[in-house]
Length: 373
Image 1 (cartoon, one colour):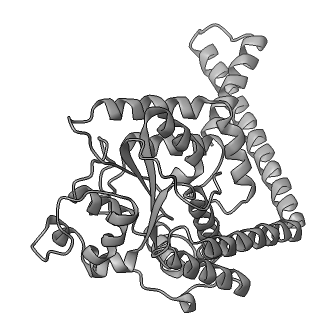
Image 2 (image 1 turned 120 degrees about the horizontal axis):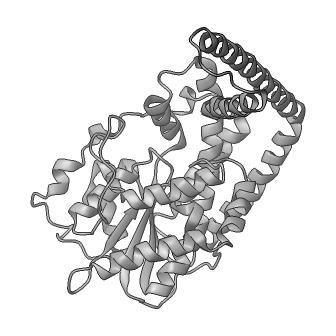
């Protein structure tokens, strides 16, 4: 991942803005606002849903691309595991994901209107594959820029609970709160790091909802973008109907989240440091402080893994035992079904199934049933 402290001076070509940030951080609001200000979102887009009725403003292909490869790696969007970084890096060495991305982005650039467009791609998964985006953008002459939505981690965790865990048990929700805070810290640190060496900007979700014109003024300057309106003007704009304070449904604090003290303090410090980058996106002291926290996070995570070694091993043994028991039960049931079919066939004059053929049928049926589980 790039670590240079300042953005390059070159102006390669088509602006390509990657909108990043932890899920439920306001990335959709940010991307939707940019679209209304004249930037182009590659089509087709992900359709709106109950969890996001105003729309996601995500290119469907990009979402499918990132999710498919993350699934292949058994990674999550805000995966808290430090080892996940190495897994992605090794996976990208095959060149396959990069080749797919190159083909798609090449098509998007070829479809541009005369005079060019500013492209905005929003996907909270993008930071995992930042290297692929960097390589492809440079090859195709696109000017990659990072725009990160910031939202307080307590609000993110609360918003994710409301959106995705409302039907789950209290025990699971409490466990996921700690996991989600850790995931927020990890994703925030990684997202900040991959943006180094590029034009980048950070914007607080609360600031965007309170006064989108003021919030986007530094974004416009830092990312060198062109909007279809003068941000100093108070004339009515389509964004006025899209952005409103009521969109901030979750306004929780740390009092509403159960997580270890050290993790809460770490998340709060990361939040404050990222906030400092809204005015100076490449401040060296801030980046060094974030690097120190990143090292601390990795060390504490390793301690946690070591501390829970017996628990993890026991869970693995129990899971394997349950899988064997389920397979044994399936085999027994299929044998009963096969024997019943034989008896029924004999009663109706059907030819008997030989032993080898019966075993083959049984094996295929077991594989199908176990796979469906």
